[in-house]
Length: 215
Image (cartoon, rainbow, N blue to C red):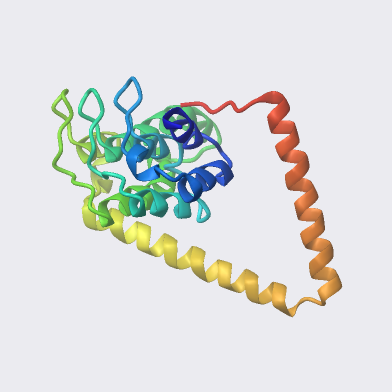
């Protein structure tokens, strides 16, 4: 089960993660278990889901509710906040050339906009920014190293980014829910059935080709 909970944090679908977190009898005993690299489930979640989606927030909150140590460190002293920043740097390397080729200036700020809400969520829930890895670096020092001089960030900026992101996404969810309520029932049912079939087909295709996520 320890390996299963770690693997579920890598999945693009949150279904398996929610199932393990909600239905495993001894989940509290494995929630802070570590793999061979000293990584906990929350470390892995941070590395794979820093570009947070509103539905993934349920997994993140459940991890804390079940007892995840938000400041746990791996074998080289890195916290979940370090891993969130690592995702930022990895995605920046991938995105930089593509963004520059398309004449986007400051690709660092575009990638930061995607990562900032999750980093802010971590800090808002108690992640310490003063913890240094065995390489003697703090997470925000690494983040700011990659940002332009006039765009350095601090804890307050990241927490505000998370709160604004959450507010906007919750409002959008409510608007979508209200819109669906106003639809004629047969239109809503047809939409739901079509959506379910698309999901089923996509999951079937993913099972055939396997999960491939770049880190």
